[in-house]
Length: 212
Image 1 (cartoon, rainbow, N blue to C red):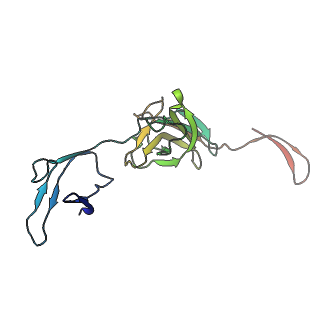
Image 2 (cartoon, rainbow, N blue to C red; image 1 turned 90 degrees about the vertical axis):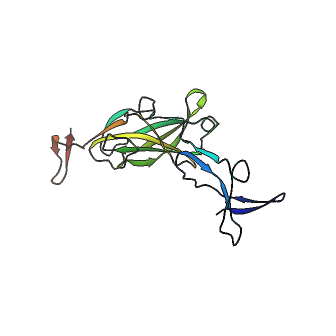
Image 3 (cartoon, rainbow, N blue to C red; image 1 turned 45 degrees about the vertical axis):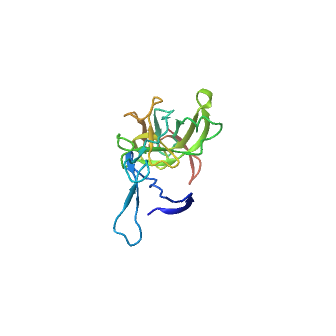
């Protein structure tokens, strides 16, 4: 139901807020009034009352203009090593201003499956702001170490960004582009078993060894 807002001349003013998670699309709206004790309604449109014309609301996409995986596009590490990934984002009116665009949230994620990063099964990590980049410093850059706790195997990674208040994400891939089947690839190799190639006995309970 609408809430009373006050008077405007001889009229009473009512207001209703549409849900913030309204799906993309075109919506039509009108007003409806009923006197106490009546079973009939009077409808109002954008032309006034009685109704002849609906109002029109277009809910459009609210994604960042551009994002990517800036670097690296691939890598190979041994388990327990770090692997820092860098991603950039551009949104006119936000990242083009001086300093970090705090109205944008950034993640870098990975999966063991090479599929769309909007799919389930991706792990998304919080990032650290890494400064302004690009022409006229119009991009904001973020970074995260994605290798913590990874076991040996192959992993695919991408970036994800969201504007505050939006329900949508935009995903970034390698080659400086929005994601389009271009996830980064990380190979994590197992730690090898050290083999002693030479040793010198220096006591009954200790020795010096050289390792490969």
